[in-house]
Image 1 (cartoon, rainbow, N blue to C red):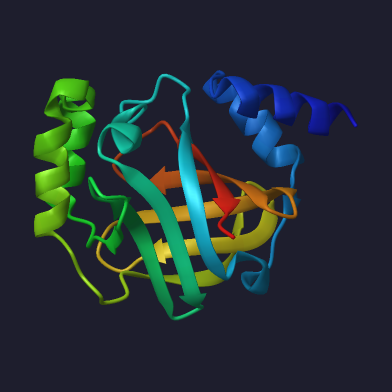
Image 2: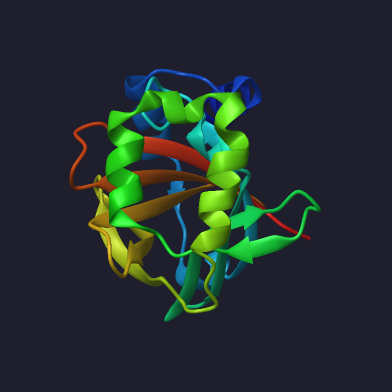
Length: 180
């Protein structure tokens, strides 16, 4: 019960420490591949990570898991709320980690333009069961980046995700809610 209450409190504020987020992640139940199928709307969980706020500033919508071989890790919305798929870019990831100014709200039009130039219909990731932090759970593996996103169940329609990026010592946390 304490875990559920702690989780709800953290998700409500959208902020916590990396240590507390890791404790919460470790306490949550693993999920299987079928659980993750579908479209999910995302939000960041701020832990003083260099990427905190960037997804929101760039109109990140979430992720879509078509099947284990076809995953769209980056869905964004345009100014008319149309959702489109974006191909992850290693150079963009490097900029994100080094230039916190990109999270500035005034740069939102530039970020949206950049995303629109990276549109794709091609799957950019896969979904596998992998062990991470002592539990085997559904994990999204990017095709072209050294990143794995592992998921744990908050409730039947919510997961806590953790981005394990080889080039970062600090994990990035996010929340996905199942789209209806």
